[in-house]
Length: 571
Image (cartoon, rainbow, N blue to C red; front, side):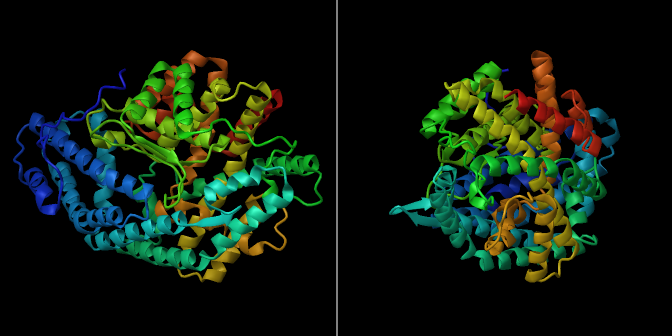
């Protein structure tokens, strides 16, 4: 394996010097694929490779537009460039892709190609054909525009504190300070800023729900949830399984979270545990500060990954060398973090909003896990094989978080701080599972009733918060902030129904880590082999290759939660 071997300049179908300027410039390549006469299996497979090359080129082209726009949401030219693509080019590609799918499926040579190689791919494109409706293309374009509005609204949120303008990510660092009055002041200032845009975000979400429901109806589905299960290719589980997951989390994990918060309340010595008491160290220690700069975060992550496996460190080093990292929080930058796969170059891009916290270290390792996954699939023959489902993608990133903990000494030379960081990580994992259940169930319910009012949505959210969040935290006098807490979750606006995957993959990651604690070399080898499969096998088979079960039953959840608590007790 060599992370430096990149696919760039290896074009065979598209000229190396070609650049995409408008639809007319790229259309001939699609027309070639549509009209090409295919008479042999070799010609059919060459057609697939050429289509894959075009997919990689177009994906990377729009990828860079998206990345640059997110780095600076205030730059109108970058926004204009991205929106030109989604308004003028993407709507023309969608129907042609459907025609290409039809051409492949209708080929009389289809039965002669290797079934094992193309089985998952063929299953996916048949589903795409089944749900494609040309009348949905302009609606999807409008939704893409709206999702970028969310990023622009949230990315512009700042507060003035101590005579400084701070992004909300920068300001949240103060919520780890021991001065409770300071924490409350900052929390309320952040909350006030968020609430000032709550109606704008509420209206935006309502509009998006209406548009999404229309897409579902056009495609013959009762609701958008059912449409998205088809669109996301969820062949391995159903909506009923998701509801069982929600209930299992409520029974097995929420009581543990209440125990954590009761302990926190006692250690802090407060009469009531308030929202601004959740991030501070309960023993009165200063906030963990593992890194002081973006450069340090990069270099220490490379060192950490080198210790896990030299190839992992090489991947991160390659990204540093070609500047495929933008990590620091700044005004005008969109919220969140992501790893964007760049299929043509073969080297992904990591975007995030670091402010020097332990959470930033975990985010970097998480996105680094996605990046390693991208590198490991570079040799797969089709771009489609590298477009893995989120249940697999998040297994890569979340497992990396846990495996890496044995090497966090590169971030901490103080044993006490190292143990604190590990304990925070394990508590954070268990805290995340109820939040995943909350967001996922919220989506199921709002799309089952797309005509609900803002008030009904607020009431629904509060019921879910009652069921899945800590009963120790006191929200008295801050009910409005609690009622709109869902607005912080960008997935609701930008990638609907992409969230249950975090819960499924988190369980898988705990199982990978458990294997790693018992047999490190074997577990790491299984993890690598699973990631190298990309999406050429069913999810359950990929999980089995990683040495774990694709299972989110109540018994399995209890087993894994017990293991995490056992490991926490060792700290």
